[in-house]
Length: 384
Image (cartoon, rainbow, N blue to C red; front, side, top):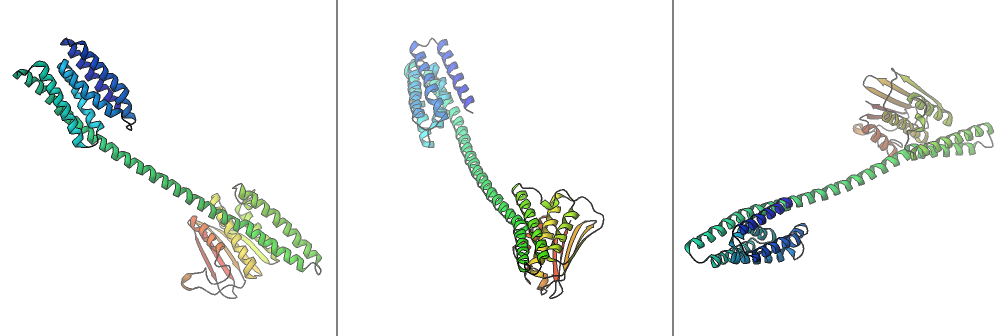
């Protein structure tokens, strides 16, 4: 836009100068035209880049003086009116002020031209036509300029609002990401470190209780506690490094689940078995993590609440997904109403179960928990 404006100014000034040369204008006219061009370069052009300041208003005063001087000494140079008038529209704020500046300058051009050529009918008519044509053209250009400026301002405000909205959205997304990461870390810590510490505490307490009466059993429990501590340390390192669960390292999903069930059997000295049905196949890493964490939570609840003597776990590969079932013969719980299995007994509600449900729902799966007082509990997690 500014390039076109500068080019138009240069072209009009050049044409005006050529007309003055053709009409043998005095030297003063060229000096005035040169001063006007220099004023444009050092006053108006910088003002277009940075509107703040006085330069543009000084240039309007220079424009009025230039038009008046040329009208008195070389009316042929009044072609510059075609670029002089638009500057009033570009610089001044109110439309009345713009119009007043243009009309006053046009009157000065008309009066100066008549004074130079005389008050004959032809001279007056020529001056009137010259000034009126430039005035009407400039009014049209001024109107277009005002419309373009307003549209530019509107777009500028719209872009500013869009940028502010984008910044607010980015900040909201960042906060949501931070919150989601905190929740993920909390769930990972609960499913790994917290459960590991619970096992350690139970093993140490059991070892302490049998220290005098069963040295062999105490040694076995302490060995198991040391192994659990090492596994927990490995889980902590994997968590810090954002790796997959240690249970899945170097083995299949079935191996990882089988080791977890066998560990519970050894820790609690109960009967626990794990089996696989269906045709095993490769599962996405995210699905494997969900199943491992689900089994860990089920075993943690059995360890803390069930007082079970038997645990049966099954991983079933089905045509449309995979299903993990964990059943125990422990205390069970009162059947909840309306299918709500989360509020009837210890271990069937709280952070662990909420996290387990959240993991499975994120994998587009389902979780069902069923039980009865004295009849144990069955947890069924199915992931498509």
